[in-house]
Structure formats: C-alpha cells, structure tokens
Image (cartoon, rainbow, N blue to C red; front, side):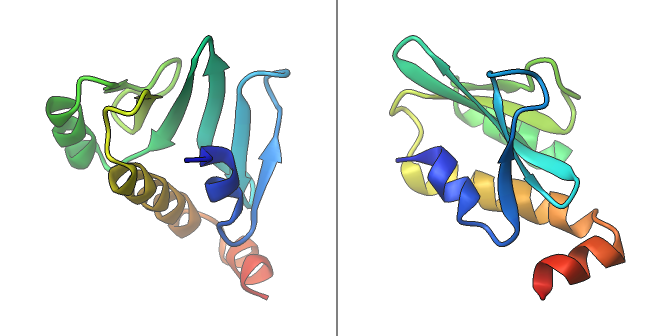
Length: 114
C-alpha cells in the first residue's frame, strides 16, 4: 500500500516538510494528520488517534506504539511491515484525517470544501 498517496487523496491534503527532508508530513488546512518516514526496508507512519482507540490498537498490534516525538496520548506510530492488515491502516488514516479536519477553523473547513 502506498500510504503517502492514500493520505494525499484525502480532500484538501497536501505534503509538507517542516522538519527537513524527513519525515514527510501530510496536512489538511494548517494541521498535520500523518508523518511518514522511510527507515531501511520499512515505512513508518504516525497518525493522530482518539486516546481510547489508540490504547486498544497498541494492545492489539505490537507494531503500533505511542507517537514517536509526539503527544503519546493522541498519536500512534505504526511500523508498516505487513503485520497490520491494510484495511486497518486505511481506517487509521481516515480516523486521523477526520479528527484533524474536525479541529480546523470554520474558515479552513469552508476553503477545503469549496
């Protein structure tokens, strides 16, 4: 699965590099909903998540840990090594996007929905 392209397919999503060449961040409006890094032979993605859901996912999958260099309550870091089903990854990306989109200002939401 091409995580970056899936993230960029979300309405209003764009790629940014506020921290240098790595990680790539994917934002909607002024806020990021995904951070994507390529490490060795695997892709690592960090996604925003409801705190209760985040804990549940961490218990279910060893490849999901508290957000690396992020608020550990609201972000998960996921190693994409094939151990997590693709439908779960897609759901986590959608969930992250939705959480961030809901937190945007009314003006930002309106400009994206035009």
